[in-house]
Length: 343
Image (cartoon, rainbow, N blue to C red):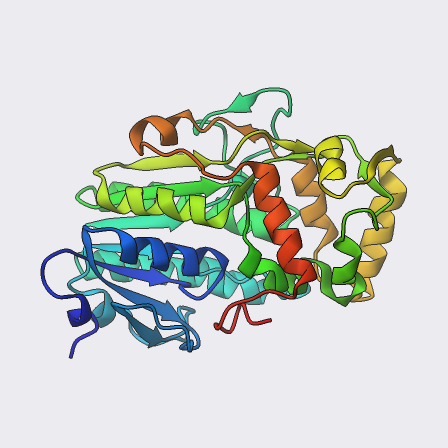
């Protein structure tokens, strides 16, 4: 049986890379619920025990040393490219090989296989520094914050796709730019990626955190991963092109985060906090790079009007609800039966 036979012939056949991660698991589930989708091929480095009905799995590394992707993409109606490596932040060449060189391999294989639609996971992190007092639309410059590897790689893929679209005008290319994605099942993974063992999960219980640092620029947009997945599905089934901002309302500042944690916002000077984070990262006490912290404080707020109008998309969860669910999962050591999300 070929990679795409499982769902039958009456519907779309969709390939999802990075199908076992935070976004991938939600996108796979959302695709399988949509009546227009017949089958899903999930691509990941390790095949999970999690087996949603109508989904086949392919264990392959998308990086430059991985196997040929073209045979697996042939016959697909769309490729949703979500695969991304956040760590190790101390070895940016390693993440570059997967995120940029691997991402380019996915795009080139989709074109060679004749796939008519490519949906690429970009990010709010691709945006150049911007305003916190008003939202910007998808035309805001996408040069990222160059010191942060995550932003640099997301921005590089945007430049690559600019040229890619010119070479493949018959292909429908969609770039999804979500804010920070959270769900209960992603809690254990995101703690490993960003906080490590330095921050006990039990500390995130309301009332145990005395204060939230009120820093200049600390205003961010969050989104429940399931809501992001709903937008990805619409990008697959609707004849749309281009970029879409995705975020829930309202944005979260220090006061909003403090309310969630039953804490109080505390104005603190940025330089000592940044120096402490930098020292902890150099000592490998925390996995998140201080450069990513710098980027977060500079990200613009996004206007999501285009997604609402052209994808008929509306988040079910507020930003605060998405973060609250993540914190609940953090305290419960929540996860899923996939390698990236394992508790």
